[in-house]
Image: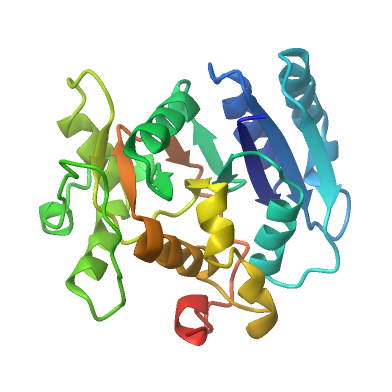
Length: 265
């Protein structure tokens, strides 16, 4: 298998079914799906809607693995568990509240293989903000004119300001600006939330999410830390247009007092 889609989920049965529906409409043939559910009650994948999408995926030839990962030990451990369930060359971490437009995985795979970097991401768009244009937040936008180079990015570095590119509907506005181009456009990032494709070797070589043992169970920013490490060693990019749509459901990570990228040196 070329690519594994890894979905962490908890108490989001409707959103999970929507996420699976996006995967069922992809035109990329060579991917499998691993779902890791941490719901305290019935898993989200047990609903009729989610089961229907699982059947659609399996009928199309995609292996779908449905797992439980309890007790909950934080998002970093959840992501580490998913990585341990995967064997593919590329791993796409896809949050359970993200719908992917058709063709998204094809673009992501094309970009990471052509660019030869450690990760590429589709920033999630909050389309309820579509009429909220934020030119100041788009100011840090800069394309990669060549293969991405490794960058050491910290909260004190000027590159950190790129995080504003992914606020609200900013990814949609950036996508509109390059919509007439014949292929994807790579650009410089601080990190990407919700939809990130890694070269597995790059992620494992930089420690993956094994740092989960070194931080409190209640934390956030674990995906940021993993990406910062990969960016420093192998480089990475966001790509446009983004096909990732945020479902804008309430967060299930409510305690953000510990940010992994600050807690782990």
